[in-house]
Amino acid sequence: MATWRPDRAFFANRWTRVGLVLMAVGWTPLWGIVLLAKLGIWPDPNPNPVGPGMLFFLTAWPAVVCVVVGAVKSRRAQAKPPGR
Image 1: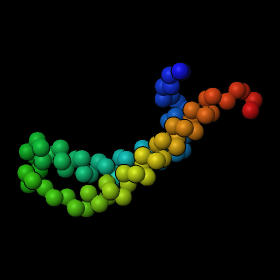
Image 2: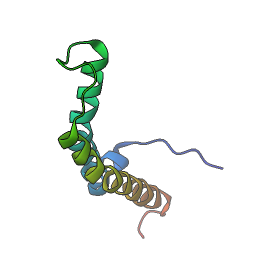
Image 3: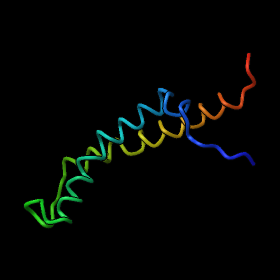
């Protein structure tokens, strides 16, 4: 079984880039609040971030699907012989 490493083709794929942008935009606010609360920097030690939680919920599966599709497409592109 051949091993596959993410390379330029993986990150150059539009599906992958869209998925990573969705992850950054949709997941960072929630995980940032969780991390800041854990470190004691957030004003509320037990926050209930409804807005960032809904944003995470709406972007989680689309982001994962986009990254997986990008991985499959870049893997298939690498497996094709040149000229096809």
